[in-house]
Image (cartoon, rainbow, N blue to C red; front, side, top):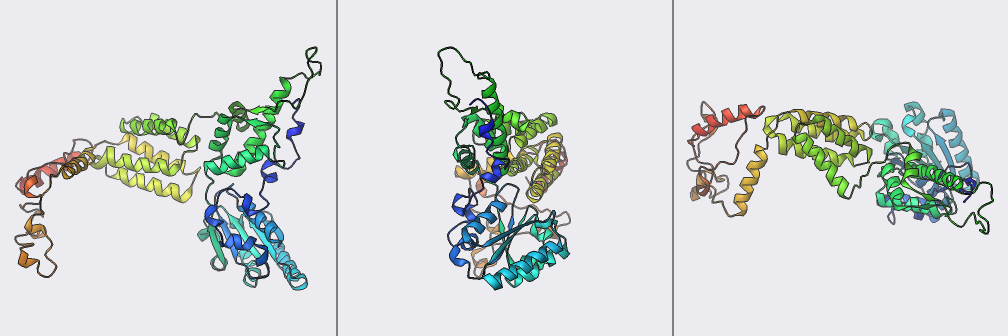
Length: 459
């Protein structure tokens, strides 16, 4: 291809051109598009004469909220009106409501009102939607990226179905990218996409279809320009060679993707070696108390689009396995970071993840609890267990005392020191020690306290 003009189909962005015209073309959100689901029913032309339920679509950017609304409108044959909460006001909403009422009463036509970013509406603006929604003048499809429980008024929530959209999977994004390359509405086969470039686009999109298609379009333009510059701009190629500008389509490479998004592309496969290598280095850096290395590997995972919930889970494991009672607060902080990531999402979620990483890397370490439970499990698996001592058995059910259950048990709280000498382990394991505290951090105090306890227990 000798120029890039053929890659620019119109001034309309690729992500807009590739919006599905029906629910059958929608990638992802299968949990919302099952047969008989509210969205599928709403898109059915046969349902236009029945009362339809308004819906609120809640999900991250690029997951298909606008796409679903437009596909439903096209499939159902309903009139479609779109407003953005960024620019619309109460006057605009009331005009739409009045016009929709007129269309329904005079022409029997139902209206879908798609309201993007409804969380930006004030309470008064949201109140203006209530009459139309409650009386069925419009079927409201509202989209929001913020938790509706905090951003949408209760009366509107109670009159609508709340549907949660999920980030697109890698397979969903790959399907969209492949479709955009070949579809006449998209790049129409004017470029090809190599395997590494496709993987990079999927990875960089982080579940956002719009981001994937925008990057693809920019990379396609770069590939076209490179092909044109590498050709014969004067049109007088080598003698005896007939040029065919369309003989070879430009190939989008990983370098084009890197230039298009203006960021370095990490070699990272969320399902392959890099995924396991980087998380291994991350955990070992925390265990080794190298906070700078730990933060580095955290940044690599974040930039590569790793699931932040996976990172948070590994932090919780690290706090339990490598720190334990040397600093019990470590587990509290790791769990809090996981909750924070779940609550606020990314990119802000990187901050509590970094805080937890820094704390875990710089605090005292002990694997004593981890070793203790593994040693106990090994004994149990090897048959190293016996009957529960008679005085520890449950004595609450009828007949238990006649069997001797609970006989001789001494209640520790009746002792001045809260510890009494009696046997707790089965006979076969008497004297066994599983937990051996270190002298690191707060576990130093645990060790001293445990020695006193063991003496009181007669061990």
